Image 1 (cartoon, rainbow, N blue to C red):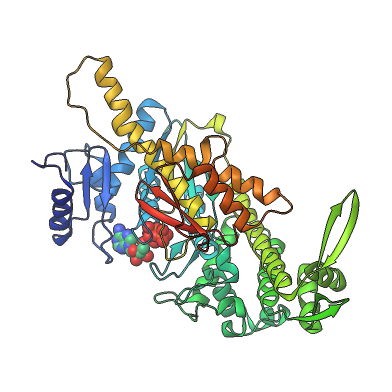
Image 2: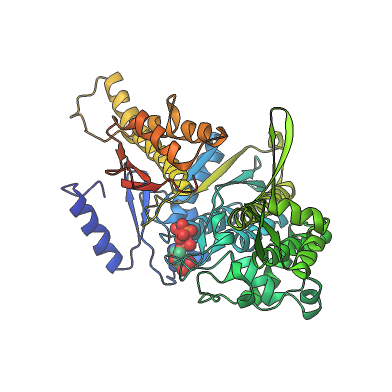
Length: 492
Ligand SMILES: Nc1ncnc2c1ncn2[C@@H]1O[C@H](COP(=O)(O)OP(=O)(O)OP(=O)(O)O)[C@@H](O)[C@H]1O
């Protein structure tokens, strides 16, 4: 790209387009690689290609994801300093596929075909089952971010690994938009368990469960849920998950599905609307699967306990609040299952870092998001992307130009948009958006509306903040580096 005569947006796009038409999906711009999703299997990921990139110098050969993997691997071996590959792009751009190709390359470069490599590969079916779902943009969309670190020994052989996970999208567990599904694992569980096992968990077909149905989409093209389930089970074995724990995970998933079908009824006590669980059979089943007492469970779902003036006060919940508290419980259970899975994988892949010579890390996180309706989750995702953007800005422009200055090199100053102000407003300076959200959540009388008015009064004077035109609109906007996004405060 940098050899183009004129470096403008349209020349860059034209270059990418011409190359894409010739099935050349990779292009360098400086040390970065741009990948365009081909949406077809190209014959460019064979063992021959791996060997070709292993034996060549970057720059002498066509751009390729393997060249990026090779460059990191060589730098690690030559300099013993840890390397990191950052992958970013919007949903469906091909981030996760690129991560897998990089892992495939690193495993091949490491030379020995070892058990630990097999274990690292087997993390994919598990993480995808629990963290990926069909969305309108991508049939296998990762709904969490991850940082995978691969550790090598002094001879360049893979010794271990570690996965950090971020921001699992929990709202999906209780609700899916039209045409979208819940996490793959639920459909795989219901289709893949034996008849006997299904009976133990009282499971039937996917369309019997409210939590699997709100998107009106039960299947996913190109995915055989039942078959995937046996891959997931064997991956659990390869990664040393105790059999009892695996069964506990399945029981918790079944409890989640039954909780989604739990019905509440409203009644009045002294003119105060209260709620109770109406389906005793289902409540019993859920309590058994969760290993708790049924009465305690029903009470916990329909009552709220708080401390006022040092005394414990119990109040009743309306049906709407009971449903909200049930959904919150479900999200918390699933979040803990996901954390437990990643922790257990890490225990298996763990290698004492003292014994390794260094690592190559691969960051695969959500790209910038801007939907018709954006919530707190989008704010967090976009804040993470603002941080990545600042990282690029710092390395490509700020540090480079500082270096030119130090060395007395004459150059024409490049004007770039620095998004530091945006970062300060969202999460860094005192009274930033996240700090105000935190504060209002702890404030007993805090509501979405009081939060909005605090955000407006603290930030309306900033260029990157957009206050809603009318007080009836319960939202605020942020001018991000990639465009303006409006966030609805409901549920913040
Ligand atoms: N290099 C590639 N070759 C062939 N197909 C690809 C390639 N990269 C991506 N794809 C196709 O595009 C689909 C979406 O890619 P992927 O899941 O990696 O996107 P993503 O950027 O990780 O999206 P999300 O943010 O939603 O998780 C893949 O399931 C695959 O079918």
